[in-house]
Length: 58
Image: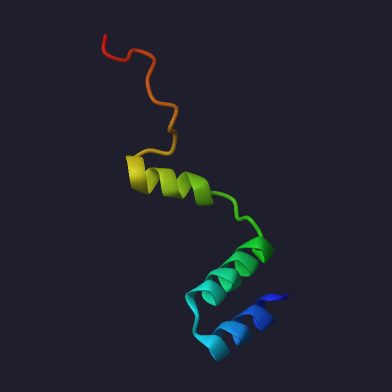
């Protein structure tokens, strides 16, 4: 099923399961964009690297 077909199916039924299927189809066809994960880490942690620290508790 393509993104349009999944949306039409959800629009016809209004079921949560069908919306989740639509989102799955939409996300599987989306092209990854450079910097998306780094941006998410910057928002969540205030920095682009999430390696943590080597001196835990020292």
